[in-house]
Length: 250
Image 1 (spheres, rainbow, N blue to C red):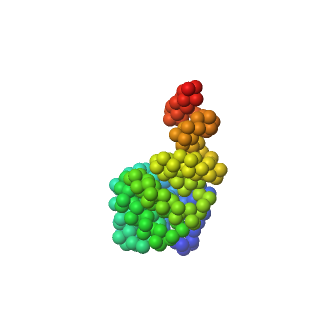
Image 2: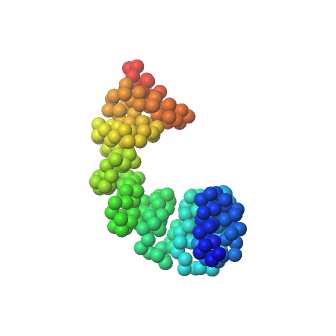
Image 3: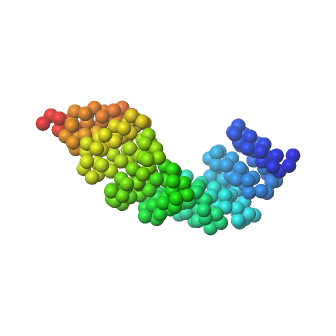
């Protein structure tokens, strides 16, 4: 079998979760793809250090293989080691600066590091490459939301909704923006749309808050109880329920 055949066979074994067999098959192959696949095997087996070591071996042999840096960055990102993740994705982008995937990961890393303005700039570049990338547009809106620029956040959400008006995360964020700007009825409408698309305890919680602030205590109680059914141990939900019960007695 050629090296390419062995790599294809290893990919099949990985799909079948035969990680040890795949690692042995790739043992003597020194191609970037082989290092990536061995790393994937170790990662799937929750052997983080070995997964990282394989990628570093690959980088030593193939220092211009941008995908190896990307995969290493992704592991660091998944383990919330954001400084290391940023360093490695910058290495990948130094070789392949126009990659949509790489730029998107950099934006996500910067967002998690709370560098919202830098993250926004990166996601703006991503949406220039792919205007209908809803996730990137959602991140752009979240960046503005996190720094309190609510009108800019709303504008970004509305642009994203032009591409996908059935996305529950967009409607949820739009509701939160209206909540922060005290448009409670509009917030309630957006939270209800989000719930109709994908019910969750968090959305019920925010809906209850919007209804409480809109002085609709009875519906707020109904919806905070829905949140508690979904996540009975969340202290935030019980705290709001107690406040609502007290308000309803007055």
